[in-house]
Amino acid sequence: MNLAELNKVAIAMTAPGKGILAADESTGTIKKRFDAINTECTEDNRRDYREMLFRSSEGMKHISGVILYDETIWQKAKDGTPLVDIIKRSGSLPGIKVDEGTKPLPNCPGELITVGLDKLADRLPKYYEQGARFAKWRGVIDIGPGIPSYTAIHTNAHALARYAALCQQAQIVPIVEPEVLMDGDHDIDRCYEVTEFVLKEVFQQLYYQKVALEGIVLKPNMAISGKKNGKRAGVEEVAEKTVKLLKGCVPGAVPGIAFLSGGQSDEEATAHLDAMNKIGNLPWSLTFSYGRALQHAPQKAWSGKSENVAAAQRVFAHRAAMNGLASKGQWKQDLEKKAA
Ligand code: 13P
Image 1 (cartoon, rainbow, N blue to C red):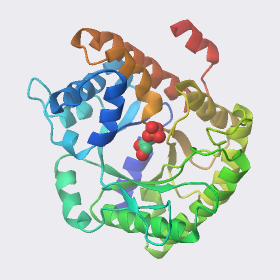
Image 2 (image 1 turned 90 degrees about the vertical axis):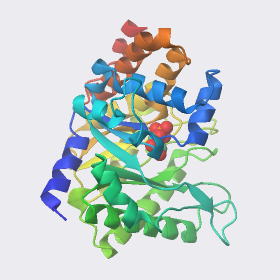
Image 3 (image 1 turned 180 degrees about the horizontal axis):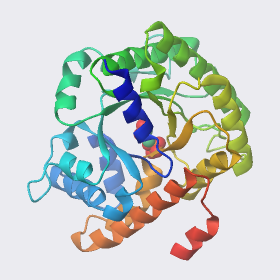
Image 4 (image 1 turned 180 degrees about the vertical axis):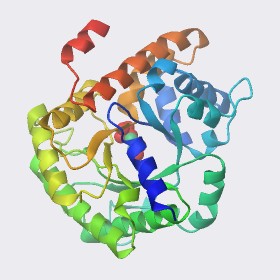
């Protein structure tokens, strides 16, 4: 393992002004997104949609890396150019989602464990060969009555650390993503408390499995109220609590943190990131690794029609630019209004 090189990649992934485009939806998930825009979920449509994003030269200026699904990393654009080459030419790094989704966790009703470790050591060199310089594995922790259990937190943290160690051995930067879901009606303090426990456990497991923190990127949720909570915390509170939480849990050796959007609205996700960076004086860089909050708007604008490609690329470029500014604490709400 060349740690200096891993560290360079992790720094590039979280460079101020840029962030990560999470375009690694599984076929089932992208089908749900396509259903919402009345677009058939064929292999060609998935290719055309993602090619549209990767060829958006304005948008890609703000994208340091793209997380791909297995299908996409091997796919070629309509003109035969490998999609990974289009990403690389834009100055962005290709990455790959390597987990194989979730399964019910035995003895823990309602809780999940992320799977995919078995053949991972054999798969990673092939992804490296194909151009992937980083990977992603998402563990999912739900908040509800009586959950999460310690079993779910521990088992998922253990799997994340096993994955991270295997990635580094293959000279691939692991994005370590322990996602505490925002689906419930819990308040921000409950989210804080659960996320704190989860992050403490994740860093303990990373330590036990000898993962070099200089060569990872953490992808956490923010400290945020559940979606169904009637009195959701505002932007300042989310920013202050998230920064406090991360300062207490994430060693300064980690080069960068790239948040997931997790179901926040597009503008909320931007405003939260911006407010955190406005606090400033942080030991790591803070940026985005958004899926939905970067793709909602371009998906709608595209709606499966080739005549909409230019409009969808403009919409994507706008969202990417807004989040790029937020990663430097330089976003202003006025900029949204001007674009609208
Ligand atoms: P969202 O930003 O839509 O939460 O997706 C990010 C991601 O990669 C989840 O694993």
